[in-house]
Image (tube, rainbow, N blue to C red; front, top):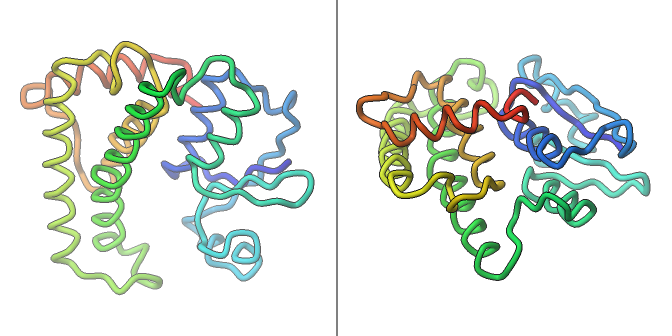
Length: 208
């Protein structure tokens, strides 16, 4: 199978972290990595659009030609193949809570950061009808989401209780991605988020 990837992008990183946490060897699983450079506009090429009509990364191409895009869909595929070291929950309650928080992070924090980046960075100008005010509002929304996450982590070791999950992967990739809109964790304002960030950044998978 092939995994279309780009080291600098947050969504492909989510899949790489997921595989690392699972202990899945690319060689053992038969995964060939294909680099697609977003910075050079390769995701907008005709050739890549045939692979991923929505132009997004990552994409997993199975041996039978099936193509799965979206980080969580790819992660779900590997969760089913390799159920050991579960990252998406073990029972109805934990699965629901992890899904809830993962969606909150995707639709709230990650989306706010992505919109601010798309509408405020010159690299997106050729493919985005940029609105500077929307970039600013989205950055403000990201600040609000960071505040909410810090408050939540006051009472939780990880995003969902005491066990590391895919929600932590999403949160870490979003927080680290926020540097593109000049957002960093303020240890005085966000001590609980800073504690969590240090904890998850020390995991080997964070370097995937």
